[in-house]
Amino acid sequence: MFAQTRQLMLVGLLAALPATIAAQTADQPATTTAEDPAATAAETAPEMTEAPAAPVEGQIVLQSEDTILADNLIGSRVYSDTGETVGDINDLIINLDGSVEGVVIGVGGFLGLGEKDVAVKMASLSLNTDPEYGNIRLMLSATREDLEAAPAFKTAAEQQFEAEAEQAQQNLQNGVAPTATAPADGTAGN
Image (tube, rainbow, N blue to C red):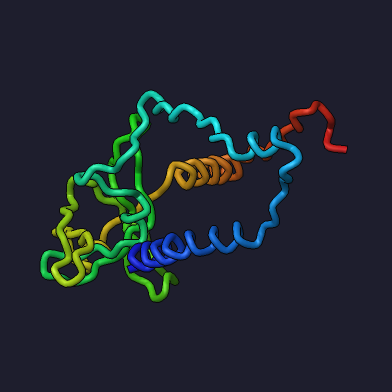
């Protein structure tokens, strides 16, 4: 719906543009006089147009009908096979080759509070068209209860933090004093 509103605003602006340009040109005073024919000729000569822009290697100019933008996925609701809302897409998991491995679905909670993230492979989602509005509808064979009972998704940063915290805990249990790391500039922290 936001995209439709944005399109309507753009159409309205484009429709008003010719009238705005005409009003601006009518208000501008003439800057040339008949005494200077060179100035008049320079102002009335057609402008030199630049060559059309050449596409960049690998550039996509138009979106194809069998693709979807990440902006359209993030925030979208995910439904079960029975039509129940099971969560909404909070993030995408993208491989280094650019392919989308999966989606992170926010499940449970109220108004974002207490929500947990569960990740599923992109292949486990099916994309259908919402019969009422024509928007894309994401379907998942799992129920809300299935996702709420599933283990939470952990990002690489969260995994690293947990590993470091566990190592620090083990060091304390073994009587190893925590070591302070020296600043990269070689100073002793003064």
